[in-house]
Amino acid sequence: MNHRIAIAGCSGRMGRLLIETVLGAEDCELAGALDQPTSPAVGQDAGAFLGRNSGVAIASDLRTGLRDANYLIDFTRPEGTLAHLRLCRELGVKAVVGTTGFSDAQKAEIAEIARDVAIVMAPNMSVGVNVVLKLLDVAARALSQGYDIEIIEAHHRHKVDAPSGTALKMGEVVAEALGRDLKQCAVYGREGVTGERDPSTIGFATVRGGDIIGDHTVLFAGIGERIEVTHKSSSRATYAQGSLRAVRFLAGQAKGLFGMEHVLGMA
Picture 1: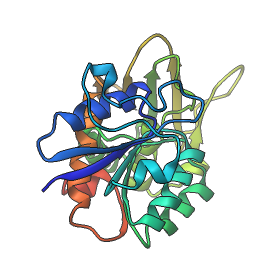
Picture 2: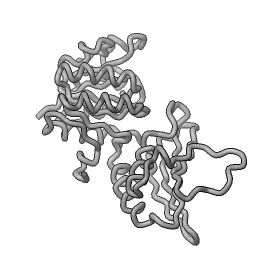
Picture 3: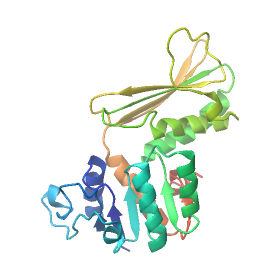
Picture 4: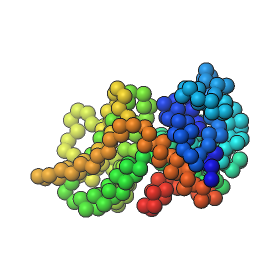
């Protein structure tokens, strides 16, 4: 079975990697490539950066980019992703969403769209990160008393949202395991005389610089010991490969909103 896939944001770093990964997969076919109207790449062959002729021209019109596709992979920005998903619902195109930074209202709209079309949405498509999320649930339950929890993340200088979607997901997993609401217990910055640390809080620290692809550490700091659960990305290839696993999972789903835990059979 060939999975006919369109890629959004195809001229970006992630978009190009997704195109390369799709072109290299035996069971996948590049069926569309989308970019902003202002992009100089519009009209060019989507495989030109690889020195290949894919037969797919980069389009700025959504309908043109999606008309031959059964799936869309989208790692762009919240507003653009939502516009894409609205049309996906109309056309019956399933979607894999790696975009981060959605508001609660935007997440609610995605859940509504998923009542009609199947969507996998995850802040991180890496298989390793999603295994770490499972480990964090176990660790948080076992270390629920006497341990302060801090989440430290680092990304490249071009990342526009902070904390990262992955860091927030880690915080949500830990908070849920502890019976807490992350919105009520998260601390996103410390400055000046802050007083003693509130043991019920979950702290976040953000680093931005250079070409760091993505590092995440959850620190459980107790008296006399500390436990660190860390994931470090050395290549975006893991996100692309995880996205194709999500596409293959969606082949068996008619509608609904799923996470990578469903894709990996850990739900």
